[in-house]
Length: 288
Image (cartoon, rainbow, N blue to C red; front, side, top):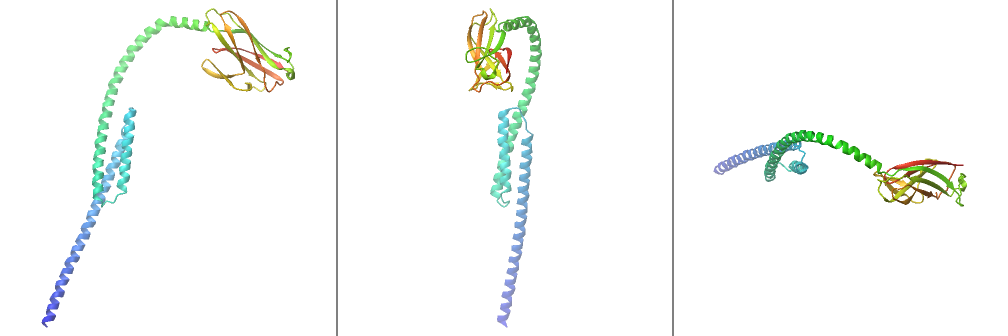
């Protein structure tokens, strides 16, 4: 009986210990669940703060390209941090604390940009006011200046226009292999374009290149075996043939020959004549 009584006491003691262990385990489980829940809330709050910071960065605008480039880099850092947080378990408290520090750093950087942008905006307002006053003053000065230079400009335009070399008596004939004129397309070897550069005492003296552009009956420019480029009035164009002449201010007659490698067909050919300054004129020829 005595042994039985001892056994009962041992069983009771073990039961009490087991109960206490069970209670402890339940407590630890509940406590761990609460901790994980709190950590998830903390992770969610941290993510929300970063999203808010991301929106704040998006609202910052400035015309300063350097600051805009720097803001773009900071925005990317915020996006990367949000992605890293989302890929990190809430139970990793070390990482979460690290991310909180990074968030603080990003906030401080953004505050610095806010100060810079505000300063720039304030400076821009002041500069705009000064610029407005300067523009008004400049407009008054320009008005007076324009009135003074109108006569001079008109005179300069007249002189410039008068210095441009012009042409007259532009004509086109077709010649055969015997260098005689013909209008039979099957016999034509070359087109001969002649013109006279008019006398102009104020024009620039020296070598001048005259260009022709030959357009066939189909309306397509005939450029020969290779495309050659010239410039007139700042525009590049393809020419069919050219010739250089020594212009000394006196009237001079020149002729330019053009042979089509593909031969000539029936129809109307148009020849446009140019100098490096202007179009001098045009002439047509009908081949049968």
